Length: 467
Image (cartoon, rainbow, N blue to C red; front, top):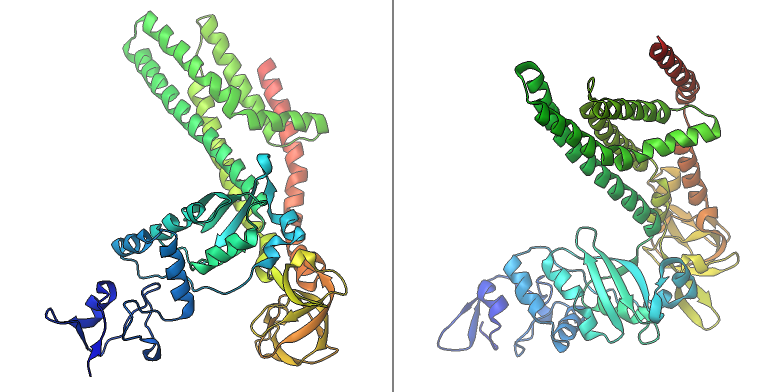
């Protein structure tokens, strides 16, 4: 059978035989791909009279939006990158919860001149073409000032004017072109940790560069000590070593000095105190020997010690942060929105807007947003998160349900009794987090011994100095 249609070279050249002398396409028992997402088009949706073929109405709408706003270059860039992964389909959500005051209070940051910014996680980000398309949305949507997309984390930072365009409109636009947005939760803590890590890495880089150069000068001085070196060159190398050690001690080693001062103020002894004393003693003794042109200098040891201690502290911080991620686990186990039942219907709201007595609707496949009582409907729930039992449990009116469980079969209406951190899963995660913070008995014993150890080391060092 022959199919008469105009040729769309982008998909037909790979899946249909084309005759040069006519617009006749001969099927070769291969599927036709959607012009937007590239997935197979069902046989019932193939339009023989259309130049473009789509697998669903969502892809048709996304294709139209992209071309209507002059963003058609997205497809050419995606083809050049030859990516197999495809953007997510449109969910069709209204995203009215993005305009809720509770959502704004938690996720949106106000800027000067009436602007606002929010961080959104985007589903379906898989290549540079996605970045190109998302970052050009301000051209298509008046009121959107800027969108910057972190490709590695699929995190979009949106800056817009709330007086000109609501956030729900931006979210619907993103969803319409295949990238469903979600609020990025826990961003403040993660940003703070990232800033601290970045600052420590800068200190490590500077300390490493200074230590390397001081070691090169020390190598020259040690070589000259055994094989002879002119006095003027020896003096230059020693003074250069002092100048390079100054920023290492004065800036790179500052965390250890702050810790030592804090230990003295709180009358507790910990390892920062002997470290600070050792660094300061080595630096002062070396400086004294340079000024009076006598003895040895110890700057290569001081700078190397600072560098290695900073590396150790960075590794320790990463280990602690990896072990203290239980609070973010709570966010991943609970949904960001809920379907709140009101007198005039059902609307999506952020879970922060739920309170005791609120009634929510949980559709099949959705996660329960809070602890409560079923007031309408019968269904089965996946409670494996709390019980470990993979077999679904049936619930009906009057039964207790908990946040984090998944509704499997039929819609339910639930009256909320506890929400957020007060739910059972919230209390569970709080216990996990407290357990991660609580020190083991062996660690508490080591803390008690470390104080005596530090005091003993300092006393012995003073006695050695006096002798």
